[in-house]
Amino acid sequence: MADVHFTNVRVFDGGGETPFTGDVLVSGNRIARVARADRGQRPPPVAGATVIDGAGAFLMPGMVEAHTHFSWNDQPSLDSIQRMPPEEHILWCAQVARQYLDMGWTSCVGAATAKPRLDVVIRNAINDGTIVGPRYIAASQEITVPGGLGDTTAPHLPQHEFAFGAIVSGAEEMRRCVRMFAKYGVDQLKINLSGESITGMPSEMSQFTDEEIATCVDEAKRWGKRVAAHARSTWSIKACVRHGIQVIYHASFTDTESLDLLEAAKFDHFVAPGLAWLINTCHHASQWGLTPEVTRRMGYHRELEAAVESMKAMRRRGIRILPGGDYGFAWTPHGTNAKDLETFVRVLGMSPMEALLSATAWGGPMMGHGKEIGYIREGCFADLLLVDGDPLTDITLLQHRERILAVMKDGVFHRAPPLRSPGGTTRYGAPASVTRWAA
Ligand SMILES: [Zn+2]
Image 1 (cartoon, rainbow, N blue to C red):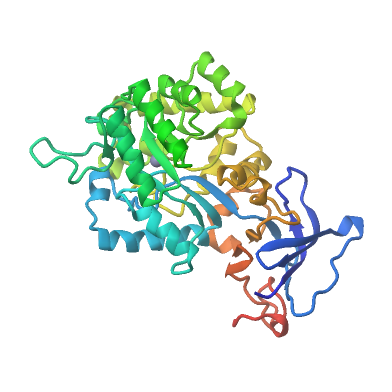
Image 2 (image 1 turned 90 degrees about the horizontal axis):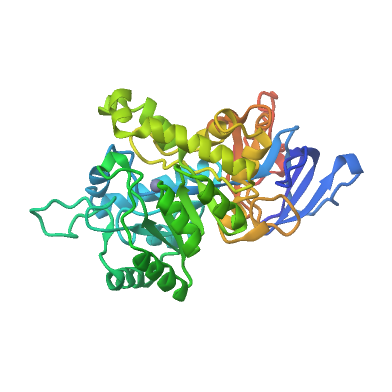
């Protein structure tokens, strides 16, 4: 693995300061040196290093997506996602994994898988180099109760046969279920603590008992696994804090008590609201029969309003809000994930800086890597994006593949920057003589 020397780049280092012009040296899979031009620093030339002349492009840490479902296949229902046969399904997941990396998401958190082992197999294949993809936290299926979100079984067919989720009832079935997923090798258990209006169970309903939740958390802990919850209702948000469930997805309906509880434990939790799902379900799903009138009747417009207010309140209280919009449905297709950052700015009132930090600095601990991910600092993993333009001026840039000039994960280019052509038409990239890749 040759060293890579980025020169003449504007460095957004994940620390929240104004980007500076400088050089970044990558050695192996780590960032070896960061030099600031305004301080007269410059890393010494390294023999054999590939030099990338950034020509003023924006160098930032790779982004972290906090709520992904690689196995959701851009279909309009849970049932149609689950009905894809396993052979096609694993190929689908592999293609989606590549797509996320391609769009600058160098780390992704699996928020549930559609079949028991899809996420685990994909994570392993990424890690051993069989397929290309981001760093990945592999999830279980959604654990639910009979009749809960994820129970897609029909009354007249054998139960569990085609269920979208893993259906349990009672503490002992929960314990068995967690053990089964631990055996399969997941990193994170997903539990559906509230309903989801589109499936017939309202978002404000909560179906698990405290005993079942406690068993899930206890058994997960024994196996060294993390728990993440689908938690839209107020009761379910409080249950997450009460039971120490670190990852809270959605958190739409809050009250003062739930916000107080969350704030008091804010460094123990991550919140990923999945606003893209709510916004697109309310406003951009008519062609699948979900007109605004239909989704208003389902309660989604009220939920969207509540979720926006909840997120604004959480932001004021310093609770970590991360991007991750439940992409992978027909009206939230994979690859459009960076729309979340625009939503954070336009709808929640975050500054572009805050939105970028939510996708970088806060992603490291979410991935279980503390400050080794999400920063451009000496010693951090070399997960880097070279961007044409300044996302702090225009946060929508990151939605466009062509504006992300290069993607590096773990010190290796997934996409190298385009070469500077002899005619000077392409601005980025080093002279051909010092690059290793072909034009
Ligand atoms: Zn989800």
